Image (tube, protein in one colour):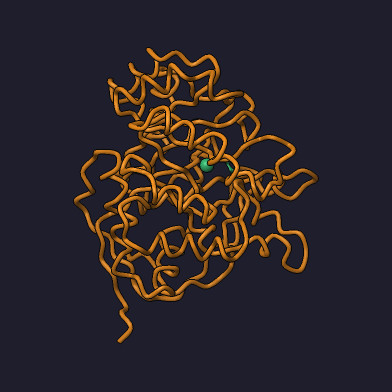
Length: 346
Ligand code: DOR
Ligand code: ZN
């Protein structure tokens, strides 16, 4: 008999873009209603490179929370060529930085100040390996000679595999894995290497970008890949394996910035993230492993206790909102206007 209710430990989001100002205020409630904690990406303008900047950003997030919301932002450091190992260690040891993020320079939104060559942050990475601080990677090379759809696989070969050879104990999260190559690499690596998987990469292949026309709201980086890759992601996410956990990569941009010549990369999935994961797990007959993926594997990797509270999903048809207003503009959620069969109970 099909199950119509599912109670799990309160989940966390291990990869999230909250932005700042009016956008932060508009998008934060969607995350805080579901998730107990979130790893907050540091790609603001200016980027969050210092402990003081992360503390100030954390304060702005807490201030933007709806009254009564229980939510803990976990802050990250944006690595640049100039990052000082001492600053990173100080942030980690004082509990401000939960991790540090590697954006290869120009790989994606607000990554212009990212790392131009991994060799330049050798000392930082050595220090992180020594103190057990997780490195979160945007795993794509930026070499224009490499096909966009191959950039993740080539990153593994050129950057990640050599890095882990050099620093085998470094804790690494391969963020928003989009390929079978990434899944296989993470699986074959030690327990210090894990991956997050987004709801949209579990749902769409690259065909969705071109369905009946050009679809800017299906565009994010790393871009969705072929169907065979999506199927590998679904197997990994629903496997229950400790290495794979939830990270939405919800990345809101105003509609005007998505629907233009040279539109921004980023999919705003927060309004229905957990419900979309539930749909995927249901389709894969794997609802029993949703709690491991959403609520247990992530905290275990980060060395944190899982949340004590519980959330309940009910089988109840509802529609993803068409738009979320932000000042005079709006953001369009992933699967806007579509019906979903699972809904978080209030
Ligand atoms: O699509 C993306 N959007 N990928 C990223 O890596 C960054 C993100 C953003 O900040 O908009
Ligand atoms: Zn991201």
